[in-house]
Length: 575
Image 1: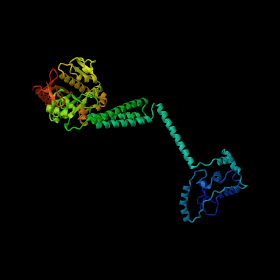
Image 2: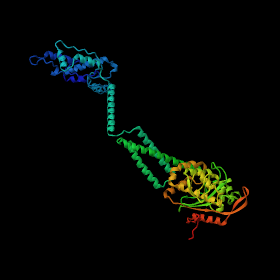
Image 3: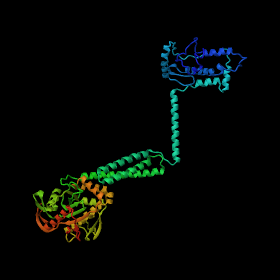
Protein backbone atom coordinates (compact mmCIF):
# COMPACT_ATOMS: atom_id res chain seq x y z
CA UNK A 1 0.00 0.00 0.00
CA UNK A 2 1.46 3.38 -0.99
CA UNK A 3 0.83 6.96 0.04
CA UNK A 4 -0.92 7.55 -3.27
CA UNK A 5 -3.53 4.96 -2.41
CA UNK A 6 -4.33 5.96 1.19
CA UNK A 7 -2.99 8.85 3.20
CA UNK A 8 -2.66 8.03 6.91
CA UNK A 9 -4.35 11.37 7.68
CA UNK A 10 -7.54 9.98 6.19
CA UNK A 11 -7.91 7.89 9.31
CA UNK A 12 -9.01 11.07 11.11
CA UNK A 13 -12.08 11.26 8.91
CA UNK A 14 -12.70 7.56 8.25
CA UNK A 15 -16.24 6.22 7.84
CA UNK A 16 -17.36 2.78 6.94
CA UNK A 17 -19.92 4.19 4.53
CA UNK A 18 -17.29 6.11 2.50
CA UNK A 19 -16.08 4.75 -0.87
CA UNK A 20 -12.76 3.03 -0.78
CA UNK A 21 -9.72 4.81 -2.17
CA UNK A 22 -8.65 4.00 -5.67
CA UNK A 23 -6.55 0.86 -5.85
CA UNK A 24 -3.77 1.17 -8.37
CA UNK A 25 -1.21 -1.51 -7.66
CA UNK A 26 -2.74 -4.26 -5.63
CA UNK A 27 -5.74 -5.07 -3.56
CA UNK A 28 -5.35 -4.06 0.03
CA UNK A 29 -7.54 -4.03 3.06
CA UNK A 30 -8.13 -1.44 5.80
CA UNK A 31 -5.52 -2.96 8.13
CA UNK A 32 -2.46 -2.99 5.86
CA UNK A 33 -1.12 -0.03 7.77
CA UNK A 34 -0.22 -2.31 10.63
CA UNK A 35 1.66 -4.65 8.30
CA UNK A 36 3.77 -1.68 7.29
CA UNK A 37 4.66 -1.18 10.94
CA UNK A 38 5.97 -4.78 11.08
CA UNK A 39 7.84 -4.58 7.79
CA UNK A 40 9.60 -1.38 8.66
CA UNK A 41 10.56 -2.70 12.06
CA UNK A 42 12.14 -5.82 10.54
CA UNK A 43 14.03 -3.87 7.87
CA UNK A 44 15.54 -1.18 10.08
CA UNK A 45 19.29 -1.22 10.39
CA UNK A 46 20.50 -0.75 13.91
CA UNK A 47 23.97 0.37 12.70
CA UNK A 48 22.57 3.32 10.76
CA UNK A 49 19.63 4.28 12.99
CA UNK A 50 19.47 3.50 16.64
CA UNK A 51 16.35 2.09 18.21
CA UNK A 52 14.45 5.25 19.04
CA UNK A 53 10.97 3.92 19.59
CA UNK A 54 9.63 5.68 16.48
CA UNK A 55 7.20 4.39 13.90
CA UNK A 56 6.57 5.44 10.32
CA UNK A 57 8.42 8.50 9.05
CA UNK A 58 10.31 8.76 12.31
CA UNK A 59 7.16 9.97 14.24
CA UNK A 60 4.32 8.67 16.41
CA UNK A 61 1.59 10.05 14.17
CA UNK A 62 0.51 6.64 12.93
CA UNK A 63 0.43 5.35 16.48
CA UNK A 64 -1.78 8.23 17.55
CA UNK A 65 -4.09 7.51 14.65
CA UNK A 66 -4.23 3.87 15.68
CA UNK A 67 -5.20 4.75 19.22
CA UNK A 68 -8.02 7.00 18.02
CA UNK A 69 -9.14 4.29 15.62
CA UNK A 70 -9.20 1.78 18.48
CA UNK A 71 -11.16 4.20 20.75
CA UNK A 72 -13.72 4.79 18.06
CA UNK A 73 -14.17 1.06 17.62
CA UNK A 74 -14.84 0.61 21.33
CA UNK A 75 -17.42 3.42 21.35
CA UNK A 76 -19.16 2.03 18.32
CA UNK A 77 -19.48 -1.35 20.05
CA UNK A 78 -21.19 0.30 23.05
CA UNK A 79 -23.89 1.99 20.86
CA UNK A 80 -26.40 0.07 18.70
CA UNK A 81 -25.73 0.41 15.03
CA UNK A 82 -29.24 1.67 14.23
CA UNK A 83 -29.07 4.49 16.84
CA UNK A 84 -25.64 5.78 15.75
CA UNK A 85 -25.99 8.29 12.93
CA UNK A 86 -22.31 9.08 12.35
CA UNK A 87 -18.97 9.19 14.16
CA UNK A 88 -15.40 10.21 13.56
CA UNK A 89 -12.06 9.56 15.18
CA UNK A 90 -11.71 12.23 17.83
CA UNK A 91 -12.28 15.18 15.46
CA UNK A 92 -16.00 15.96 15.07
CA UNK A 93 -19.36 14.24 14.67
CA UNK A 94 -20.99 14.01 11.28
CA UNK A 95 -24.74 13.46 11.06
CA UNK A 96 -26.30 10.84 8.82
CA UNK A 97 -27.83 13.39 6.51
CA UNK A 98 -24.47 14.92 5.65
CA UNK A 99 -22.93 11.46 5.01
CA UNK A 100 -25.83 10.58 2.80
CA UNK A 101 -25.40 13.79 0.83
CA UNK A 102 -21.68 13.06 0.46
CA UNK A 103 -22.39 9.59 -0.86
CA UNK A 104 -24.88 11.02 -3.34
CA UNK A 105 -22.21 13.44 -4.57
CA UNK A 106 -19.48 10.79 -4.86
CA UNK A 107 -21.59 7.93 -6.22
CA UNK A 108 -22.13 9.35 -9.72
CA UNK A 109 -18.43 10.04 -10.11
CA UNK A 110 -17.52 6.51 -9.02
CA UNK A 111 -20.07 4.98 -11.40
CA UNK A 112 -18.69 7.05 -14.24
CA UNK A 113 -15.18 5.76 -13.54
CA UNK A 114 -16.60 2.25 -13.14
CA UNK A 115 -14.91 1.86 -9.82
CA UNK A 116 -16.15 -0.79 -7.44
CA UNK A 117 -18.47 0.53 -4.75
CA UNK A 118 -18.10 -0.77 -1.25
CA UNK A 119 -21.38 -1.12 0.60
CA UNK A 120 -21.66 0.28 4.12
CA UNK A 121 -20.45 -2.19 6.64
CA UNK A 122 -21.67 -2.90 10.09
CA UNK A 123 -19.13 -1.70 12.58
CA UNK A 124 -16.61 -4.51 12.95
CA UNK A 125 -14.98 -5.60 16.05
CA UNK A 126 -11.44 -4.38 15.75
CA UNK A 127 -8.72 -6.85 16.50
CA UNK A 128 -5.14 -5.72 16.34
CA UNK A 129 -2.21 -8.04 16.15
CA UNK A 130 1.34 -6.92 16.60
CA UNK A 131 4.06 -9.36 15.71
CA UNK A 132 6.55 -10.51 18.33
CA UNK A 133 9.25 -8.63 16.47
CA UNK A 134 7.36 -5.42 17.19
CA UNK A 135 8.17 -3.98 20.61
CA UNK A 136 5.08 -2.25 22.08
CA UNK A 137 7.19 -0.87 24.93
CA UNK A 138 8.02 1.97 22.55
CA UNK A 139 4.40 3.16 22.70
CA UNK A 140 4.17 2.66 26.44
CA UNK A 141 7.26 4.84 26.87
CA UNK A 142 5.59 7.45 24.61
CA UNK A 143 2.52 7.47 26.84
CA UNK A 144 4.65 7.80 30.00
CA UNK A 145 6.59 10.68 28.53
CA UNK A 146 3.32 12.46 27.83
CA UNK A 147 2.01 11.80 31.35
CA UNK A 148 -0.72 9.44 30.22
CA UNK A 149 -1.17 5.82 31.12
CA UNK A 150 -2.28 3.78 28.19
CA UNK A 151 -4.49 1.60 30.34
CA UNK A 152 -6.01 4.58 32.22
CA UNK A 153 -6.75 6.49 29.05
CA UNK A 154 -8.29 3.47 27.50
CA UNK A 155 -10.47 2.81 30.57
CA UNK A 156 -11.44 6.50 31.05
CA UNK A 157 -12.36 7.05 27.42
CA UNK A 158 -14.36 3.89 27.38
CA UNK A 159 -16.47 5.12 30.33
CA UNK A 160 -16.99 8.62 28.90
CA UNK A 161 -19.01 8.54 25.66
CA UNK A 162 -18.62 11.27 23.12
CA UNK A 163 -21.21 14.11 23.52
CA UNK A 164 -24.17 14.14 21.13
CA UNK A 165 -25.42 17.10 19.08
CA UNK A 166 -28.28 17.73 21.52
CA UNK A 167 -25.89 17.76 24.45
CA UNK A 168 -23.64 20.23 22.66
CA UNK A 169 -26.67 22.47 21.95
CA UNK A 170 -27.63 22.34 25.62
CA UNK A 171 -24.10 23.32 26.60
CA UNK A 172 -24.19 26.27 24.21
CA UNK A 173 -27.59 27.43 25.53
CA UNK A 174 -26.44 27.14 29.14
CA UNK A 175 -23.33 29.15 28.30
CA UNK A 176 -25.45 31.83 26.60
CA UNK A 177 -27.84 32.08 29.58
CA UNK A 178 -24.95 32.36 31.99
CA UNK A 179 -23.52 35.18 29.88
CA UNK A 180 -26.84 37.04 29.82
CA UNK A 181 -27.22 36.70 33.60
CA UNK A 182 -23.74 38.02 34.09
CA UNK A 183 -24.42 40.94 31.74
CA UNK A 184 -27.73 41.78 33.44
CA UNK A 185 -26.23 41.64 36.92
CA UNK A 186 -23.34 43.78 35.79
CA UNK A 187 -25.65 46.44 34.33
CA UNK A 188 -27.85 46.46 37.44
CA UNK A 189 -24.82 46.82 39.66
CA UNK A 190 -23.42 49.59 37.47
CA UNK A 191 -26.73 51.49 37.51
CA UNK A 192 -27.06 51.09 41.24
CA UNK A 193 -23.55 52.43 41.81
CA UNK A 194 -24.27 55.35 39.45
CA UNK A 195 -27.61 56.18 41.11
CA UNK A 196 -29.63 55.06 38.03
CA UNK A 197 -32.84 53.05 38.24
CA UNK A 198 -34.03 50.51 35.66
CA UNK A 199 -37.42 50.90 34.00
CA UNK A 200 -40.00 49.04 36.08
CA UNK A 201 -43.42 47.66 35.26
CA UNK A 202 -44.92 50.45 37.32
CA UNK A 203 -43.43 53.12 35.07
CA UNK A 204 -44.55 51.25 31.97
CA UNK A 205 -48.10 51.08 33.36
CA UNK A 206 -47.98 54.76 34.34
CA UNK A 207 -46.99 55.70 30.80
CA UNK A 208 -49.97 53.81 29.38
CA UNK A 209 -52.43 55.30 31.90
CA UNK A 210 -51.06 58.79 31.34
CA UNK A 211 -51.39 58.50 27.57
CA UNK A 212 -54.99 57.24 27.82
CA UNK A 213 -55.97 60.01 30.28
CA UNK A 214 -54.40 62.69 28.07
CA UNK A 215 -56.15 61.37 24.97
CA UNK A 216 -59.52 61.25 26.77
CA UNK A 217 -59.08 64.80 28.06
CA UNK A 218 -58.06 66.19 24.68
CA UNK A 219 -60.93 64.40 22.96
CA UNK A 220 -63.54 65.62 25.45
CA UNK A 221 -62.32 69.21 25.26
CA UNK A 222 -62.39 69.10 21.46
CA UNK A 223 -65.93 67.72 21.39
CA UNK A 224 -67.16 70.14 24.04
CA UNK A 225 -65.65 73.10 22.14
CA UNK A 226 -65.91 75.76 24.85
CA UNK A 227 -62.35 77.07 24.63
CA UNK A 228 -61.32 79.59 21.97
CA UNK A 229 -59.25 78.11 19.16
CA UNK A 230 -56.03 79.91 20.12
CA UNK A 231 -56.43 78.92 23.78
CA UNK A 232 -57.15 75.30 22.84
CA UNK A 233 -54.08 75.04 20.60
CA UNK A 234 -51.87 76.64 23.26
CA UNK A 235 -53.21 74.19 25.85
CA UNK A 236 -52.50 71.21 23.61
CA UNK A 237 -48.96 72.39 22.83
CA UNK A 238 -48.14 72.93 26.50
CA UNK A 239 -49.58 69.56 27.50
CA UNK A 240 -47.70 67.82 24.68
CA UNK A 241 -44.36 69.30 25.76
CA UNK A 242 -44.98 68.46 29.41
CA UNK A 243 -46.05 64.94 28.49
CA UNK A 244 -42.94 64.28 26.39
CA UNK A 245 -40.72 65.51 29.21
CA UNK A 246 -42.48 63.37 31.82
CA UNK A 247 -42.44 60.25 29.65
CA UNK A 248 -38.75 60.78 28.95
CA UNK A 249 -38.06 61.20 32.68
CA UNK A 250 -40.03 58.13 33.74
CA UNK A 251 -38.94 55.73 30.99
CA UNK A 252 -35.26 56.56 30.50
CA UNK A 253 -33.03 54.26 32.52
CA UNK A 254 -30.23 56.78 32.94
CA UNK A 255 -32.38 59.21 34.96
CA UNK A 256 -31.45 59.31 38.61
CA UNK A 257 -33.83 58.21 41.35
CA UNK A 258 -34.92 61.67 42.55
CA UNK A 259 -35.62 62.85 38.99
CA UNK A 260 -37.73 59.81 38.25
CA UNK A 261 -39.71 60.22 41.48
CA UNK A 262 -40.44 63.87 40.73
CA UNK A 263 -41.58 63.01 37.20
CA UNK A 264 -43.78 60.21 38.56
CA UNK A 265 -45.47 62.58 41.02
CA UNK A 266 -46.15 65.18 38.33
CA UNK A 267 -47.49 62.50 35.99
CA UNK A 268 -49.92 61.26 38.64
CA UNK A 269 -51.02 64.84 39.32
CA UNK A 270 -51.70 65.42 35.63
CA UNK A 271 -53.58 62.14 35.34
CA UNK A 272 -55.88 63.38 38.13
CA UNK A 273 -56.28 66.72 36.34
CA UNK A 274 -57.11 64.97 33.06
CA UNK A 275 -59.67 62.80 34.81
CA UNK A 276 -61.40 65.75 36.46
CA UNK A 277 -61.40 67.75 33.21
CA UNK A 278 -62.84 64.83 31.26
CA UNK A 279 -65.52 64.31 33.93
CA UNK A 280 -66.44 68.01 33.84
CA UNK A 281 -66.69 68.00 30.05
CA UNK A 282 -68.80 64.86 29.93
CA UNK A 283 -70.96 66.15 32.80
CA UNK A 284 -71.57 69.41 30.97
CA UNK A 285 -72.59 67.65 27.78
CA UNK A 286 -74.95 65.39 29.69
CA UNK A 287 -76.47 68.28 31.67
CA UNK A 288 -77.11 70.42 28.61
CA UNK A 289 -78.59 67.52 26.72
CA UNK A 290 -80.99 66.53 29.51
CA UNK A 291 -82.14 70.05 30.43
CA UNK A 292 -82.60 71.44 26.90
CA UNK A 293 -85.85 71.30 24.93
CA UNK A 294 -86.60 71.93 21.30
CA UNK A 295 -86.87 75.58 20.32
CA UNK A 296 -88.10 77.04 17.04
CA UNK A 297 -87.55 80.66 18.10
CA UNK A 298 -83.77 80.51 18.55
CA UNK A 299 -81.59 83.12 16.88
CA UNK A 300 -79.09 82.19 14.18
CA UNK A 301 -75.95 83.21 16.09
CA UNK A 302 -76.39 83.72 19.80
CA UNK A 303 -73.01 85.43 20.19
CA UNK A 304 -73.78 88.14 17.63
CA UNK A 305 -77.55 88.63 17.61
CA UNK A 306 -79.52 90.11 20.57
CA UNK A 307 -82.19 87.91 22.14
CA UNK A 308 -84.89 87.81 24.87
CA UNK A 309 -85.14 85.21 27.59
CA UNK A 310 -88.25 84.65 29.73
CA UNK A 311 -87.36 83.53 33.27
CA UNK A 312 -90.18 81.98 35.22
CA UNK A 313 -89.90 80.82 38.81
CA UNK A 314 -92.49 78.40 40.13
CA UNK A 315 -93.64 78.56 43.76
CA UNK A 316 -93.20 74.81 44.27
CA UNK A 317 -90.45 72.52 45.48
CA UNK A 318 -89.21 69.31 43.98
CA UNK A 319 -88.47 68.46 40.36
CA UNK A 320 -89.07 70.94 37.60
CA UNK A 321 -92.07 69.20 36.08
CA UNK A 322 -94.21 70.13 39.10
CA UNK A 323 -96.87 72.69 38.16
CA UNK A 324 -97.62 75.75 40.27
CA UNK A 325 -97.98 79.51 40.23
CA UNK A 326 -95.39 81.58 38.40
CA UNK A 327 -94.15 83.68 41.31
CA UNK A 328 -91.07 85.17 39.62
CA UNK A 329 -91.46 86.65 36.12
CA UNK A 330 -88.63 88.40 34.33
CA UNK A 331 -87.65 89.16 30.76
CA UNK A 332 -83.89 89.21 30.20
CA UNK A 333 -82.75 91.14 27.11
CA UNK A 334 -79.15 90.38 26.09
CA UNK A 335 -76.90 92.02 23.53
CA UNK A 336 -73.58 90.14 23.35
CA UNK A 337 -72.00 92.64 20.97
CA UNK A 338 -71.81 95.42 23.58
CA UNK A 339 -72.15 93.17 26.68
CA UNK A 340 -75.42 94.77 27.79
CA UNK A 341 -78.11 93.03 29.83
CA UNK A 342 -81.54 94.42 30.82
CA UNK A 343 -83.74 92.78 33.45
CA UNK A 344 -87.43 93.69 33.07
CA UNK A 345 -89.48 92.42 36.02
CA UNK A 346 -93.24 91.95 35.87
CA UNK A 347 -95.25 91.73 39.13
CA UNK A 348 -96.81 88.33 39.76
CA UNK A 349 -100.33 89.84 40.02
CA UNK A 350 -100.05 91.89 36.85
CA UNK A 351 -102.98 91.96 34.44
CA UNK A 352 -102.32 89.90 31.33
CA UNK A 353 -104.21 88.20 28.48
CA UNK A 354 -103.63 84.62 27.43
CA UNK A 355 -103.53 84.15 23.64
CA UNK A 356 -103.74 80.36 23.88
CA UNK A 357 -106.92 80.66 25.99
CA UNK A 358 -108.98 82.94 23.76
CA UNK A 359 -107.25 86.03 25.14
CA UNK A 360 -108.89 85.55 28.52
CA UNK A 361 -107.74 87.97 31.27
CA UNK A 362 -105.92 86.68 34.34
CA UNK A 363 -103.10 87.39 36.73
CA UNK A 364 -99.64 86.54 35.40
CA UNK A 365 -98.95 84.15 38.28
CA UNK A 366 -101.90 81.93 37.30
CA UNK A 367 -100.38 81.14 33.91
CA UNK A 368 -98.02 78.73 35.67
CA UNK A 369 -100.93 76.39 36.32
CA UNK A 370 -101.32 75.77 32.62
CA UNK A 371 -97.85 75.62 31.05
CA UNK A 372 -94.66 77.53 30.53
CA UNK A 373 -95.85 78.23 26.98
CA UNK A 374 -98.88 80.08 28.35
CA UNK A 375 -96.63 82.26 30.48
CA UNK A 376 -94.32 83.04 27.54
CA UNK A 377 -97.20 83.91 25.17
CA UNK A 378 -98.77 86.21 27.78
CA UNK A 379 -95.51 88.15 28.31
CA UNK A 380 -94.86 88.39 24.58
CA UNK A 381 -98.32 89.89 24.15
CA UNK A 382 -97.81 92.32 27.02
CA UNK A 383 -94.42 93.69 25.88
CA UNK A 384 -94.79 93.13 22.13
CA UNK A 385 -91.58 91.10 21.92
CA UNK A 386 -90.36 87.80 20.58
CA UNK A 387 -89.18 85.58 23.42
CA UNK A 388 -86.35 83.55 21.86
CA UNK A 389 -85.59 81.41 24.91
CA UNK A 390 -86.92 80.54 28.35
CA UNK A 391 -85.55 79.26 31.64
CA UNK A 392 -87.81 77.55 34.15
CA UNK A 393 -86.82 77.19 37.81
CA UNK A 394 -88.49 76.67 41.18
CA UNK A 395 -87.72 77.15 44.87
CA UNK A 396 -85.52 74.07 44.98
CA UNK A 397 -83.53 75.26 41.95
CA UNK A 398 -82.69 78.59 43.59
CA UNK A 399 -81.65 77.04 46.89
CA UNK A 400 -79.46 74.34 45.35
CA UNK A 401 -77.84 76.66 42.83
CA UNK A 402 -76.85 79.24 45.45
CA UNK A 403 -75.53 76.54 47.77
CA UNK A 404 -73.56 75.01 44.87
CA UNK A 405 -71.74 78.28 44.12
CA UNK A 406 -70.95 78.86 47.80
CA UNK A 407 -73.61 81.48 48.63
CA UNK A 408 -74.15 85.03 47.37
CA UNK A 409 -73.62 88.54 48.67
CA UNK A 410 -76.86 90.57 48.37
CA UNK A 411 -77.50 94.21 49.16
CA UNK A 412 -80.68 94.98 51.19
CA UNK A 413 -82.29 98.43 51.46
CA UNK A 414 -84.01 97.47 54.70
CA UNK A 415 -83.36 95.59 57.93
CA UNK A 416 -86.10 93.02 58.56
CA UNK A 417 -86.99 89.52 59.56
CA UNK A 418 -88.43 87.49 56.66
CA UNK A 419 -91.74 85.79 57.29
CA UNK A 420 -90.34 82.47 56.03
CA UNK A 421 -87.32 82.73 58.42
CA UNK A 422 -88.33 84.76 61.46
CA UNK A 423 -85.23 83.74 63.45
CA UNK A 424 -82.93 85.33 60.86
CA UNK A 425 -82.40 89.08 60.56
CA UNK A 426 -81.51 90.70 57.27
CA UNK A 427 -79.25 93.69 57.90
CA UNK A 428 -79.33 96.87 55.89
CA UNK A 429 -76.41 96.73 53.45
CA UNK A 430 -74.49 93.68 52.21
CA UNK A 431 -75.53 90.24 53.51
CA UNK A 432 -73.93 86.87 52.71
CA UNK A 433 -76.78 84.40 52.15
CA UNK A 434 -77.06 80.68 51.56
CA UNK A 435 -79.74 79.20 49.37
CA UNK A 436 -82.51 79.09 51.94
CA UNK A 437 -81.83 82.63 53.19
CA UNK A 438 -81.66 84.07 49.66
CA UNK A 439 -85.00 82.45 48.79
CA UNK A 440 -86.66 83.87 51.93
CA UNK A 441 -85.25 87.32 51.12
CA UNK A 442 -86.58 87.17 47.51
CA UNK A 443 -90.07 86.06 48.55
CA UNK A 444 -90.66 88.69 51.28
CA UNK A 445 -93.15 91.51 50.60
CA UNK A 446 -95.14 92.14 53.83
CA UNK A 447 -92.16 93.69 55.61
CA UNK A 448 -91.94 96.59 53.12
CA UNK A 449 -94.08 99.70 52.68
CA UNK A 450 -94.23 99.22 48.90
CA UNK A 451 -95.02 95.52 49.15
CA UNK A 452 -94.62 93.67 45.86
CA UNK A 453 -92.54 96.44 44.25
CA UNK A 454 -89.80 96.00 46.85
CA UNK A 455 -90.01 92.27 46.51
CA UNK A 456 -89.28 92.62 42.78
CA UNK A 457 -86.22 94.73 43.61
CA UNK A 458 -85.01 92.09 46.02
CA UNK A 459 -85.50 89.38 43.39
CA UNK A 460 -83.43 91.41 40.93
CA UNK A 461 -80.72 91.86 43.58
CA UNK A 462 -80.57 88.10 44.18
CA UNK A 463 -80.46 87.33 40.44
CA UNK A 464 -77.66 89.86 39.87
CA UNK A 465 -75.62 88.40 42.73
CA UNK A 466 -76.12 84.88 41.35
CA UNK A 467 -75.06 85.92 37.83
CA UNK A 468 -71.90 87.68 39.01
CA UNK A 469 -70.89 84.80 41.26
CA UNK A 470 -71.59 82.13 38.64
CA UNK A 471 -69.61 83.87 35.88
CA UNK A 472 -66.49 84.40 37.98
CA UNK A 473 -63.68 82.09 36.91
CA UNK A 474 -62.91 80.91 40.42
CA UNK A 475 -66.49 79.81 41.06
CA UNK A 476 -66.81 78.02 37.74
CA UNK A 477 -63.58 76.09 38.30
CA UNK A 478 -64.24 75.11 41.91
CA UNK A 479 -67.99 74.52 41.82
CA UNK A 480 -68.78 73.75 38.20
CA UNK A 481 -69.45 70.04 38.60
CA UNK A 482 -71.45 70.59 41.78
CA UNK A 483 -73.62 73.18 39.99
CA UNK A 484 -74.45 70.83 37.16
CA UNK A 485 -75.15 67.90 39.47
CA UNK A 486 -77.42 69.90 41.79
CA UNK A 487 -79.47 71.62 39.06
CA UNK A 488 -80.15 68.77 36.65
CA UNK A 489 -83.53 67.60 38.08
CA UNK A 490 -84.72 71.14 38.88
CA UNK A 491 -83.87 73.08 35.75
CA UNK A 492 -85.35 73.42 32.27
CA UNK A 493 -84.38 75.69 29.36
CA UNK A 494 -84.80 76.07 25.62
CA UNK A 495 -81.12 76.88 24.98
CA UNK A 496 -79.43 74.15 23.01
CA UNK A 497 -76.17 72.60 24.15
CA UNK A 498 -74.34 74.20 21.25
CA UNK A 499 -75.68 77.69 22.11
CA UNK A 500 -74.67 77.45 25.75
CA UNK A 501 -71.17 76.32 24.76
CA UNK A 502 -70.86 79.19 22.30
CA UNK A 503 -71.79 81.68 25.01
CA UNK A 504 -69.23 80.12 27.36
CA UNK A 505 -66.62 80.21 24.60
CA UNK A 506 -67.31 83.91 23.98
CA UNK A 507 -67.03 84.64 27.69
CA UNK A 508 -63.65 82.89 27.91
CA UNK A 509 -62.35 84.53 24.74
CA UNK A 510 -63.32 88.13 25.50
CA UNK A 511 -64.00 88.23 29.25
CA UNK A 512 -66.48 91.08 28.70
CA UNK A 513 -67.52 93.29 31.58
CA UNK A 514 -71.27 93.08 31.50
CA UNK A 515 -73.40 96.18 32.06
CA UNK A 516 -76.55 95.08 33.88
CA UNK A 517 -79.63 97.32 33.97
CA UNK A 518 -82.94 96.90 35.82
CA UNK A 519 -86.50 97.96 35.13
CA UNK A 520 -89.85 97.07 36.70
CA UNK A 521 -93.28 97.45 35.20
CA UNK A 522 -95.78 99.09 37.57
CA UNK A 523 -99.58 99.36 37.60
CA UNK A 524 -102.62 100.15 39.64
CA UNK A 525 -104.65 98.22 42.21
CA UNK A 526 -107.96 96.59 41.34
CA UNK A 527 -110.27 93.65 41.74
CA UNK A 528 -111.10 91.92 38.49
CA UNK A 529 -112.82 88.75 37.36
CA UNK A 530 -109.88 86.42 36.51
CA UNK A 531 -110.03 83.40 34.22
CA UNK A 532 -108.65 81.06 36.89
CA UNK A 533 -109.94 82.27 40.28
CA UNK A 534 -112.86 84.57 39.55
CA UNK A 535 -112.75 87.90 41.27
CA UNK A 536 -109.34 88.52 42.80
CA UNK A 537 -106.80 91.22 43.41
CA UNK A 538 -105.12 92.28 40.17
CA UNK A 539 -102.42 94.90 39.44
CA UNK A 540 -103.91 96.71 36.49
CA UNK A 541 -101.87 97.70 33.50
CA UNK A 542 -100.10 101.07 33.30
CA UNK A 543 -99.67 101.95 29.59
CA UNK A 544 -96.83 104.43 30.28
CA UNK A 545 -94.86 101.87 32.28
CA UNK A 546 -95.43 99.23 29.61
CA UNK A 547 -94.35 101.56 26.82
CA UNK A 548 -91.21 102.53 28.77
CA UNK A 549 -90.35 98.89 29.16
CA UNK A 550 -90.82 98.32 25.43
CA UNK A 551 -88.53 101.26 24.63
CA UNK A 552 -85.75 99.99 26.90
CA UNK A 553 -85.95 96.50 25.42
CA UNK A 554 -85.80 97.85 21.87
CA UNK A 555 -82.84 100.08 22.80
CA UNK A 556 -80.84 97.07 24.03
CA UNK A 557 -81.82 95.01 20.99
CA UNK A 558 -80.58 97.81 18.73
CA UNK A 559 -77.31 98.22 20.63
CA UNK A 560 -78.22 101.61 22.10
CA UNK A 561 -76.53 102.64 25.36
CA UNK A 562 -78.56 102.89 28.59
CA UNK A 563 -78.01 104.76 31.82
CA UNK A 564 -79.06 104.36 35.49
CA UNK A 565 -80.71 106.81 37.87
CA UNK A 566 -79.92 107.12 41.55
CA UNK A 567 -82.19 104.16 42.34
CA UNK A 568 -80.45 102.00 39.75
CA UNK A 569 -83.39 102.11 37.32
CA UNK A 570 -82.49 102.10 33.64
CA UNK A 571 -83.40 104.87 31.24
CA UNK A 572 -82.51 106.00 27.77
CA UNK A 573 -80.19 109.00 27.90
CA UNK A 574 -80.99 112.00 25.73
CA UNK A 575 -78.65 112.57 22.82
